[in-house]
Image (cartoon, rainbow, N blue to C red; front, side):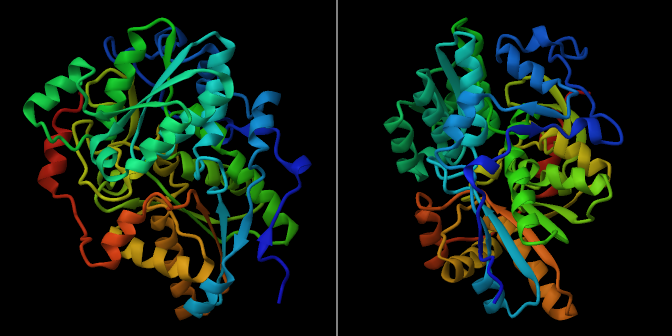
Length: 451
């Protein structure tokens, strides 16, 4: 038996730079637009929401950006994260494929989200910001930002999608342990939230609505800024430490991936894993198939349109060229709350439009079936979001079984599911069901996209 079931990096081998894919793309992505004037957004337009350093990273054309020392110091609490070969899953599937997964559940918050939460809080603290506001779906981003704020002494307010706020009470507890204040969204704390509650007191909420509430609070207070857990360029930039580490780990055992799959909601986990490998592919050093995996209930890449749209429901954010289902789209309350976003990261959308990545959508029953198999084989209970990538990896491994191909499959297990056991209970006891999106629902939401 080969000796690389678990592949570790030493602390001194942790990457000290983030990777910006934009300089290596065949053409640059379309720029964001001001929500009012429809002109190209400037740094001044973003200043009420983000600190100068993050705005510079958002607009940067530099290929590599140094990770500040204080950020590396916090990263060392859990990084470098391990890369595993899923030998038991391979055996159970009787596949000739090799399945590797980069495990981000070792972070304090249990997911990949602190990779960007820590630098975002650090740069805000440098500029004297006192408080950050944000949104969260399943709660992993809100937990991560609360943790990061505790490291640098900032206050944190989180608007959590109401369906997840009710379904995942212990995520709220985790945020509160780290000092975060958590509100269900839509909430009675903002004018927009109150207007939605007046229409439906039991509104399930969405990430777009929660973003609107958090942005409006930040814009009204000069000592407060907003932090986004996915979608934007600087967020995906910070997450590339995942892929950079995975490259080094696979090199240690002489492997390169033939297929890379990652779950995609807003795009940060996928971009974080995939972009360093896409750099290598564009340079001709490897040639993996790169595949986005999204929920069938929120199929932005596979059924959305590539259009300029708002990142939030109220239309407060810049317009971004992205694959979107429409900013008014309210996804069904599937258990993968972190993937319930109407749009896709502009960079991921651009890469997809260039033909550098594929996309598939998988219903949640198949995802949880694969996740239970994975947990019984590998011992880790996945969060609902990466169950989509696991399901795609299982599909690929079974295809290898049929064809006899010995492919190397790589994915990121972006978080554990210890606080998502209600979802597994629903699956195991037969109360979970698949949901699909009708063309009429998509058309209704798309009708409100700005022309």
